[in-house]
Length: 366
Image (cartoon, rainbow, N blue to C red):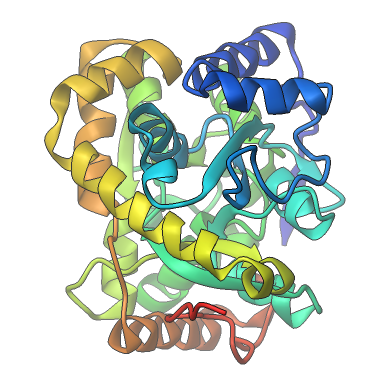
């Protein structure tokens, strides 16, 4: 096995300013009473505040500044869907760097500084198996990425990875897990042994490694790929969505990422979680049909506000989003997990089972 680690991350002033700019756009969508509430806490969003001034339960959403859920969060705030459904959504965008081996959003939830995040369900299983009192209460989507290579690269498929340096955000990244499983099942080798995996520590750092020539290929997250490809010279050699379908053996769009909250928050505020599920449905419907809204999102939240990039992100988002789930969906997710476990093994997944009560299909009012 050959594994390198690159510790350069997105701490430069340009990225920090971009987070600040996006956050300012979201903050503008808060009404005057919400801004007053924030002033009362000196801008500290992580300070305990159970209710807003109108008595609505507060749901503290902490999401990565370059993650696709921010489009949905913006839409909820833009149209007031949170207040329509009886809760107040407090949104803060955070870094995508790792904190003590966890994504920043995971660390926020574990530390009691967030009530709502999204991560893939393999990571959720891993954290719950390690004792984290977290539950997945709603699907988000098939949020996987793709293998991106320079245009002139000889890499055309995952079968071409041996002997090459492959950049990953981290080795427990869902994209690397899927790649290892597919290579072992369909091509008879493990790229962890036959290639060199290089950990970047963040999505921004991974893109920079690819541009600097530090890796031959990068397993980047889907919402960043259009920006890389359009600004070139790069191409997407293998969409991870194809591997999901091949490995799962089902036709339906399986949610890989889900929305999480803590057991304590769910028990204390089921109405807020129910409200979020309804607000999410409203936001998805709007994003599925309103092209002008995507142009606005390009202006306010995207790194590359290029019409081609915006359309690419919009169309892919509409394909990958999942609006609801049921027992059959969860069964398919568990079968995919079991298959990945059989093929790639617990070392690749970082967990050997899906803990009981991980998925909360129904949320009951108190």
